[in-house]
Length: 255
Length: 255
Image (cartoon, rainbow over all chains, first blue to last red; front, side):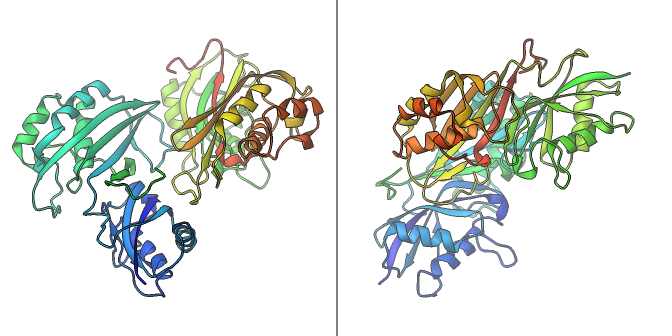
């Protein structure tokens, strides 16, 4: 009998071409779908993710839904998937039973990302591939001030990748905080959903503010321009973490 | 002309056999000494470290002293050493000029370590090699209570490696806190100096308390036993970070 399950997963983006299946490169989707097939009498399983993260982007809290024929408990399914996904840098943190019409992408009511910037002269070692290395100090207060212009409902065309497939460029950004976290800068972004590259394009623009190359008030003009070239460059994938997907009710009761 | 310099360094312990030079394996000391020789007319340089970390132990704040003949500024020396240590996972965060009798090991008046435990069923991905993976929940309050019995001046024979070369087993532990840090457990240890394996042996013992296999009050008996076999096993190197060395005055004024 088919059952729909929700998987809470973590991965190191450096090990994959991104979430989505690619012909010549290994993706998180391929690794998970092949592991799920082992619990589905060997038949192909389609995994739907809450967010299709790009190459190099990490996840602590990606959520996936799929149908499998296993009669085992959620904990046993989790352990089996963690066995079958080895040695790839992806782990299933939790498995939950969900209704047959539940969908990791369309049932989501919120998404959260974390972006980490490390400002120092020396190259990164323990944070290599896990943060954006910027060799000069940034003005965090100015970056946070600039970020507040982005919060709210806007046409985010200036912060959207050319390849973005969303029908509308309108999004409501609920939170964009720029915080000092020890020796690092942490940027927290929360919204119901994001456009393709939206977080990285916002971070790349905030970095220009932190560098003193742009005044915080310029952000309003950039939004109004509705032109990708008005905003800053796309920040590297290394520093981006997909941290949480919000559902009501939350299928992962332990969180 | 010879100048003594202090280096503040970071490394990923997984890339090395530990601090100290080995015949057949690559050590942090070898990589640094070979880089320093490039700034010393090619002649051998001896680097002295504040703490001789074991294989697999990481460092954010190891401090090293050495003599070089370079006339360059500290910032230029830092950049040159970061060039010459590539591609090894070690970086020189800062370089400071010090007096000719200053010594990273003997001038130190305090040392701090951080130990990270990750308790969950799923194998580690983003924290692989960077934390001790324990598959069951631990009682943090009991671990912290047990840790307080270790704070103070004691004979730490029960927590000392057989290979420890220190003349005396007496040490004064200034701080041993067990804290919840998000989904992780963080243990902070501070003392003027530590015995070989002392932090890992204390953590391995606290983990038995967290597991419910040992009462916090048993720690006093273990100290009194002055017998290594009375304490718990040595915790893995993966979770240990050498975070800070204290000097008065601090040569690294930016910290």
